[in-house]
Image 1 (cartoon, chains in turn orange, yellow):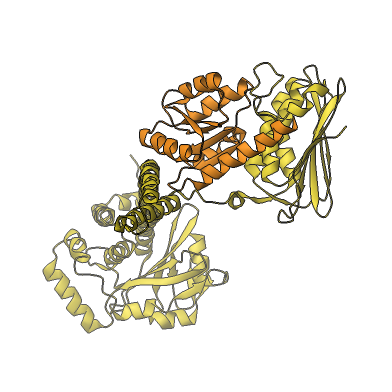
Image 2 (cartoon, one colour):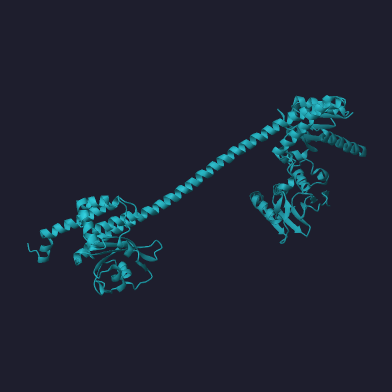
Length: 125
Length: 483
């Protein structure tokens, strides 16, 4: 079973994402901020990270930079209510940038796509 | 003490009294003139001083002035009766009303300036070109000496009398005094005794000349004043304009604050909308299709969708990145970036060489991004040459593509790093961010361009960015080391 880490400071969104993604057949782990997210990634090695950007303590972009600097190959989907972060060169380092929406279909598709491509890569190796 | 006869007569009581009277006239008129800064009122006062019985005592007076463009000498204002009957009526009236010159001058401009007089009809006919240097009146004005007109000439200048002039005035004998100040000829003051036919003697003429000098100062003052007034008005309107643009700026600032507030609000709304819509959709799926509550859930979900679109429009987040593209000349861009980094280049004793293709087509790009990408390449090149070297900029072009090259004669890149070069956060530099080449690669990608590099350890590295001239004809983006 593939594991997905959802990092978001909004309690309701964590609950929604958990319910919706579990329904897709994934194991879900939750983080409330960037600090928790980096810890969980270190410990649990999830297959995909869905990362909010604006979070207290350590924000999503900082957390992503930390993870990438440690040379951890974990696919990261930035998921934000703010569009203007896309102008930040740092966001380009992410595997995808998906705007938050009540329609979770684009996010679910992106997760499937990433898992699918990493499956082929690992198969090839 | 032996005083000569002439001096004796000069100091005689009658002579002294006359001089005192003359000085009094000048004093009174000068006082009255000081009270007005309006040119026409000043002219009226000057004329009154010339024609008042207690003033210079001429029957009529005329003022001619040089126009503002200094092209014409034109009649401006005149004063005096047109017939003996009118004269005796006017003078009687004046005598009963005003005891002194001061009283007359004080009340003069209260009743307004009379322009219906016959003399003003005469004055309006005076218009002499200043270019007419043979004209006797122009010559008198320029001589700056008062003149007495007789039957056939002006004295003492001995200039010929213009018959049309004596016909216009209706008299042969009149006095002319130039109005002037410093370098500037202002005009002429003409006075006559057309009603009483009293002769004008040399003393009257001399007094008129002195009087004209006083008048000149007054006229010039009013002109300075009106020029000043015009300038003040100009300043005031400029000030007004500044004030208005300041207000506009404030309004714009307020609007932009409102804009920022609504953007903030829109962002804040977005997150709860995701929860509302997301849960509504979940519930919707759990309710059976014939349950009427399902339709209600659908309303919630579709309305959330509507709100999300609305918020998105407010934030304009769906804007295309193409909107920020503009036409850019690659040579100009390279030169400008090189110039902006000149200090760093010079500091390392690096020689910069430009091999720019002279005829290069413009490219449609996001200038900010491409600039950032080139700056990153240049920064890497500089870092690769800590003890100097050559930094070369190339541009080449054909009909469809342009290529920008940045190459150095530095240490080169070890082959083992080649496949990690564009990975974010990969760096070989102490304190490097590892984002430089990742950004270059992303920028090239955003423009559907291609990026290649050549590197020989110990000899140097070159990076080439290739972009389509017409971006709609997409070229496949690829990253490939070209060995």
